[in-house]
Amino acid sequence: MSEINCVLVDMHSIFSAGLESLFQNNNDTNIQITGKESTAEGLLLFLHKNLNTHLVIMDLNLPDQDGIELIPQIRRHFRSLKIMVLTAYGDYKFVGQALKNGADGYTLKSNDWDHLITGIETILDGKTYIAPGLHITPPNGKRLTNTKKSIYEDRFVIMQKLTKREHEVLELIIEAKNNKEIAKDLFISDQTVGVHRKNIMRKLGVKNTINLIKFALENHLV
Image 1: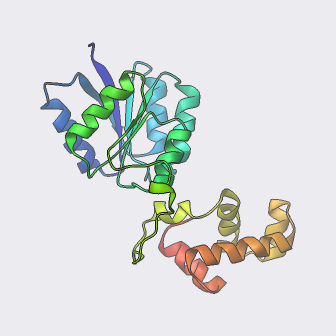
Image 2 (image 1 turned 90 degrees about the vertical axis):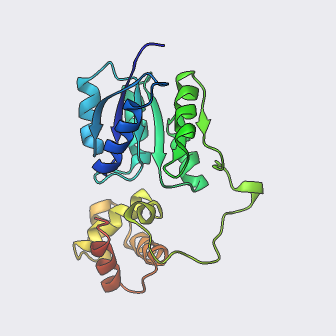
C-alpha cells in the first residue's frame, strides 16, 4: 500500500505529538503525519493547501467550532477524504450524528491502539468503522441514563444540549437584550423568544437570567 498522508486535529498539542510518535514508531502502518492542527479553521486551510491529504483523524471538541458541525463542511469540499473521529465522547448520539454528517469511522481515546489501526484500515477499504462498545442507537433500544449525573460537563457536551436557534437566543441574552429586542433581531415573536429562554435555562439547569449569563460566561458558551 502506498503512503497515506494524514492530518491530526486536536486542541491538545501534547496528545497530537504523542499520536504522531506512535505512528512514526509503528512499522506496520503506512501513515505519514503531514500536519497537526488544533482548530477547525486551521484544518480547512491545511486541506485547501494540501490536496494530497488522504486521511483526517479529528477530535470533536475544538476551540472554534463543534467538530460534528465541521464534518459536513469537510465532506462538501473533500469528498474522497477519509474522516476518523478520535474523541473522548462515546454517547450514542454523538456517534450517530458524526457518522450521519459524513465521518467514516469513530473510536475513543480510551480504546486500544489496535482499534485505531483497525479502524483506519477499515475506512481506507471503503467501509464504516465503529469501535467496540460504541452504538449509534441506545443499546437494547433503551435510552442511556446515568443514576449519578456528572457534576462537571465540558463546553462541548453543554453546547450539544442547545439547538441552533437556542444558541442564537443565548448570544443575544448575553448582550443584555430583552425578549422584544431579540425577537426583532431574529425575526420571530417575543413569545417564541420567551419559550426559547425557558428551554435554555431548563437545559442548563439555571433558574433566572442572571445565573444564565453567569453560567454562559463561566463556561465560555459564547
